[in-house]
Image 1: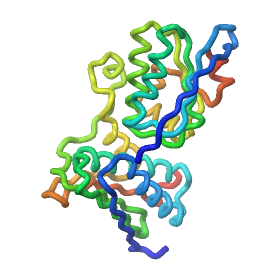
Image 2: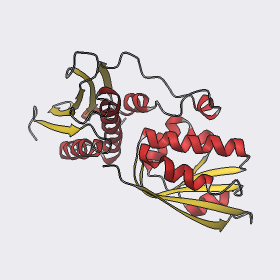
Image 3: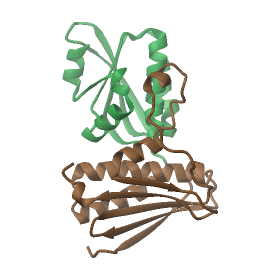
Length: 145
Length: 119
């Protein structure tokens, strides 16, 4: 695969369609030579980013779509997940299982943490509708980490 | 578009001889799984003291699904369930469950035999 190859997927704002982006990301990462375990990490990160975009960014509005842009370069694979929301201002926080188990913290709210933990770079950009996105990167030189 | 979750309930004997209820999941574990997963747990009516969750038939798990499992663990803890174990996770989801700390409240085992041996 040539560096700079890009693929774009447009998802309806309906839960479940994150699997389409997940499969596309897995296929591209496989073509680039990423190992199975890194591909599994990427699949979960991409799925969580799309779920956040569908659920929180686009508020499950079926007139809006989520754009997923996957771009290759010599260092790795970049995935941008773009929605029509205001973007995420908060930083991911480590889930506190003890607080969750005592009902002091919502059992949900782990998506951003998983994204950040599973890829080499994760950043959230706030912007006007259609410009807010999360950017994920997995690097080929981290294959043996 | 989300794939339904199916739950099959069966019983087994632990290595110690104690009865164990196994809830075997298949399909997806996502936000759409709440009724299936918690409904299966509630259907036990607090009668099961040792529970194993079998994920070997699960194709896809996301953070909303993990939150439902945490909710089940929370309820089981309040109900006085003696032990809950998990088996059949892929190596990736074994890592993810450990990252979020579920292993602190439910043992993670590679297969049913090792899970039954740990009860």
